Length: 198
Image (cartoon, rainbow, N blue to C red; front, side):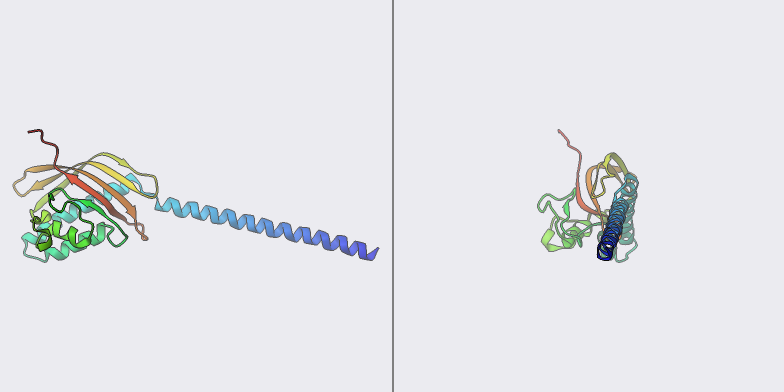
């Protein structure tokens, strides 16, 4: 009788302990799942973040031109612009700039730098887009595909104001991802002058 009671008691304890472990594992799994969802949601890209990144890009282009006009280190300003806003350190960047016809695609940091400031013999066509210079960049989004966490895409026209006050209209498509610090970085950039049937 004692042995049977002991066995029943031990069996009941084992079931109780097993249930406690299962509840703990379930609770931990749910917490982990919630954390993953929370972490993912903090990485989601919003339209507001895209608009802010666009403003930073435009301000960077204007700054490079101003540093150039002031006789400063405009190449360093351009390097900082690319390092801060483009994802060359993250992997591939698909960059097809407006005023490039011979070397149309700029897959490397140096190729992008050459486009913005010129002076690289490898890209003889580059005159330095950012040192035109421009005094203002105005964005007009046709649409922003965002709120999808991994990547956002924006398309529309941006307008570059020259020193004489003339606005130049350019079409663009930008693709953005977030780096490990949650900062938007450009991984795709295509721009072109509007089609002219003449």
